[in-house]
Length: 308
Ligand code: GLN
Image 1 (cartoon, rainbow, N blue to C red):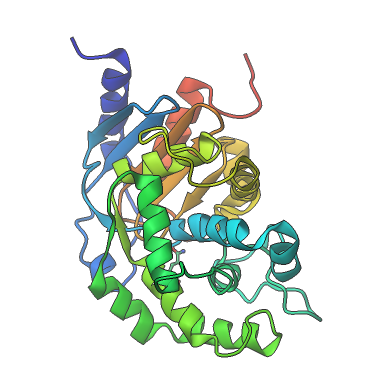
Image 2 (cartoon, protein in one colour):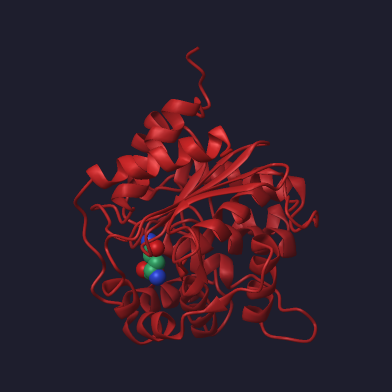
């Protein structure tokens, strides 16, 4: 007999077909051409069991969801004091593309908008025998419990068309937040956004954070407890860009969205959740993904303020 959790997840998935609207980014062929009807849900428990529904194993580029994990890697490599001097942890209240930074230092408002994410990636130290990006892919694969790959088409579109992110990178270098040539960090950032994950992978990655740094599927520690705690905190206040306040009010969990159509959320100590549906709202978050998270939070009482 099917588990009640599976039945419930399938019923949420079905309800999402009543939700319509949203648009896909046209500046990246991988995102523009994704089937708008794809829709997948996944949930991984702290004891490492994953439930999925719909298109939960279809790979798509993680885009901004990568920011969470690269910030964690940089914190792990450099420590809190070093990273806090480079990047603040305040919600920006503006779009992910904004130049949100301190007026007289250039310090980005937080690591989950583009400017802060590029600054974070620039601080990651390579493994002794490789490049920075090899390390990013290795650690992210450790969070997903499988070897992840890059969507080269998406990477090249962001690298070649990313004038805005290039400008942000030079801005960071002008303030000394990035030391020297900022283009390697821009390149690594463009590539990290193109890492292919499914909703199932992302739910395991999110569960690695909720499980305070230990991947519940492999049992291996990826991040320290303190790093996981910090990252989840910043996800709560800054993970949904200029929609973060509405999200905290209605869903009430740490989260991160990406323009690839993915959204992850995390119930500390208990659950990692991920959704995938390509059409996006005006903030750059998946329309059906938002609806799914609202339903799950309400039905399962996942909001951090309990009402019953
Ligand atoms: N690659 C995209 C960018 O850098 C990611 C943005 C996003 O997912 N919000 O603009």
